[in-house]
Length: 174
Image 1 (spheres, one colour):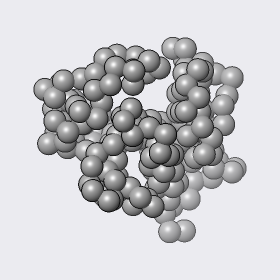
Image 2 (image 1 turned 30 degrees about the vertical axis):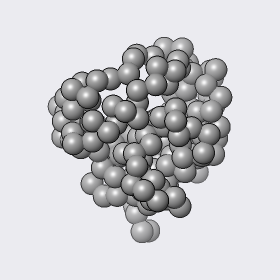
Image 3 (image 1 turned 180 degrees about the vertical axis):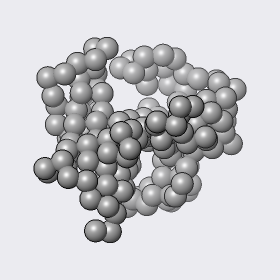
Image 4 (image 1 turned 120 degrees about the horizontal axis):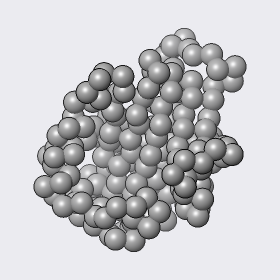
């Protein structure tokens, strides 16, 4: 898996070695107001990240792509982005999380934009995100990467989508 560059950030493939640093980034309880759960411990993250390093679901039907968002100025981790690629590479569900100490600096928008552009260049024809209807910051990010809200809700979250015009998949570089 490759790194992805953005204007002020680089997305680095996630590894279990990132767990201690990311436990600090993800420590703020207020971070879980919309996404649920609680701040993970370093041990919990190490186990989760080790499983994600497989980059594939056990049945092989999903590609698990996860990156740590790092500032270029100091290499500091500020959050993560992820894409679960399905349907033979045609559809990707994306998510982004930036630690509370780094919110309001457009890091989520910049990282999610870089991820969406990377997915589109790979030929992904549909990008989706599930967003809590009161999470205005995530709605702003979704809008900035070209996703539009749908009328579909799942587990209390609204589905946002982008589809390649005509739904035609094109290969990268074509």
